[in-house]
Amino acid sequence: MSIDRRNFIKKSAATAITAGLAGSCALPEEKSAVETPYINFNNTYEWKITTTWPPNFPVTGEGCNYFAQWIEEMSGGRMKIRVYGGGELVPPLESFEAVSNGAIEMGHGAAYYWAGKAPASQFFAAVPFGMNYQQMNAWIVAGGGRQLWEELYDRFDLMPMICGNTGVQMGGWYNKEINSIDDLKGLKMRMPGLGGKVLARAGGTALLVAGGEIYTNLERGVIDATEWIGPYHDYKMGFHRVAKYYYYPGWHEPGPVLELIVNKSKFLKLPSDLQTIIRTAALRSNVWMGAEFDAQNFIYLDKIMEEGNVDIRPFPIEVLEKLRQYTDEVIQELVEQDADSKKVYQAYNAFRNGLNRWSAISEKEFYQKLMG
Ligand code: CA
Image (cartoon, rainbow, N blue to C red; front, side, top):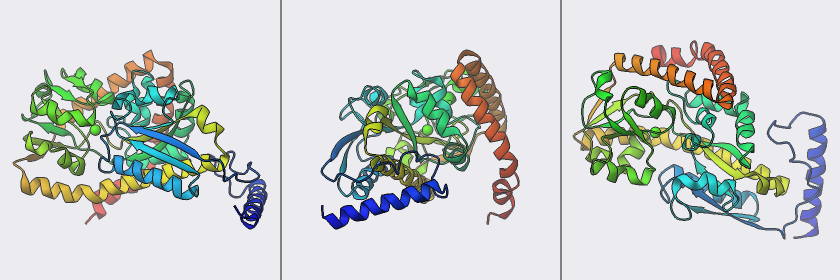
């Protein structure tokens, strides 16, 4: 590295410290960005990220590839991240453990996959009938959700970061009509998170199956129905070839957050600029994944309608009302059993109630009265 460049970086850091003291530009999540006096370009880092998705999976896998590329670019090549799909290093749903114990530095997935380790994690992914994409962003990025999430994962030596959103999902693929709540009785369905608990309350059986295995399970009748994401991904998964009915809306996942988990001890040992680069790349990925889902879903909804013999229809309102009631019961039971869930849900619910007062006269009005 040239002397000039080093001097420039030193000067930049000094400027940043001055600006930070003035209190004008420090973001709440960037606690230590100005502490490094200079950057040592001789120290390079080669990390791995494992995902819960098949390798190079559309949007989520691609987004992780971009995430790695952006980190390498922003760090001037000092940090390289190698991306592994689920099953390449560890099984998809074992990434939490692998990142927690430091065997792998990072993972990408969704927090409700870890309900068995920390039930409160589910509130950082999706709550049935809960907050949507925009609202979850507001809660986690600016409304206190991030701090609660970090506190919950601290005991696992993990640092969670918001890193994607699918937007409101579809309700899922069925081979029989759902005309009443009784039609869910005895149904074996792939459904993660709190939605799965609600399905169980309706008499169904919820199974957690990783993305790569769902098609085969549905085709072979191991499961009767499945939900996944929305038209783009679901088309790529081929569900329109093995299921007849495609129901909406995704009551169980109104705006599921995708998460990045980073081994916390290793993260904190990184130079502070690399910590900021990782946070920044995660936020960029958060925007990119949500945008890509929105940009592709309508195209693939058309494809499904044109190519398949699929009947796309809404859940009857009576079914949704019953599911909403079961959701309230499931959450009530959870917060009574688990102190973390109680704390997180109280914050979640207070934020949602507040934001809904605004959303009711802004977004909701737009969708109901202004959308062309
Ligand atoms: Ca889903």
